[in-house]
Image (cartoon, rainbow, N blue to C red; front, side, top):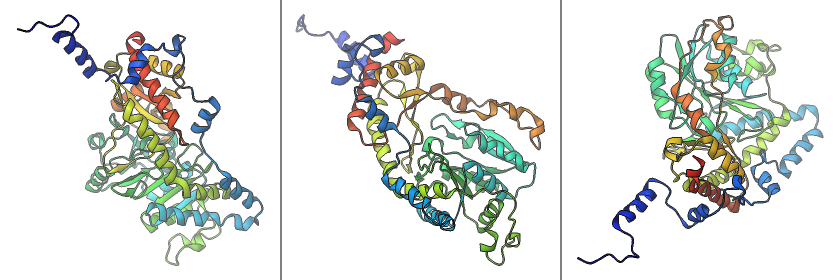
Length: 442
């Protein structure tokens, strides 16, 4: 038997070392160096040294350019009548970009929701399946039409609509299903549409986060019977304020149009049941502001390019940091092309990471990373859904474990909206440095 030299590692120590690597971080040169550095929160130098003003500029949204300003100034010099030419032009261009037959621009996403719910033509007492993990107006607006929400859980792997939970909660009053593409990640629309078709349900897409996202080559907003988008200033297509509805059927488009635009009835075909409402339409005035329409038109020309740039930098970052124990990104199918709204949402498993979400966020902030704990509204926990006077019948509020879990594990990492490879690299360094010190953060 050959004796093991005293300066060589024993099999036991070798296995212990390699086992630790397999179970934890594969210590690259960078992360190994991070272990030798003092955390910024303990007096060390921060990993992110990118100049603060440039860091802010890279993260800034919206990113308006000289062309946007030029358009706004031109409108101010126009005759008042010509300003409104941007509205039908935007609707035409939106149809072409998204592959839908009908579009209607609205003053905001909430107005688009009002118009969409009106266009369904459902009787009072109808129930609509929607996630609790959504913006309030998606749900509260229903009450003006006598509709009632059925709160559906989200898949903890994606933060998107859980079709299996919808199947469990289906009842005779449900006539529609309203999936939201959370943070720009497409829902599994093939499964959702198959479920809806099987049970005779209308699909009402909430694509307020998902401008330009697609699945199987088909844009979000083109899968459902109807869909809404928001052009509010934080969205992937920022018009400062505005919204859009898309419609597969003429009757839905006409109903949504005449609900909120008094000028539309005389433009409709002679056989339209809504043409007779010339001079009044049906009451509300919900049309988009001409400046918002003009900005949205200009932003649409650069939407795909900007989505691609943001996604490429997220990919460079996530491909490295999601190797770290306990850190993962939402599951995106190979046939899905996602976009990013607001932030790069990641999921943090404290058990696998070995330290708390708060400790991780605090440590990364000290290193200079733009990050926060995820905490998105859970509608079913709000008071309005417990009070019968606001509803045709009081919504049934149940626990939603997937929704609760997502808010317990989500973290929001800032999006880099301008090409900044050096900053991406420094973010990677910061994450690897913090993970190299995770035992002392436990």
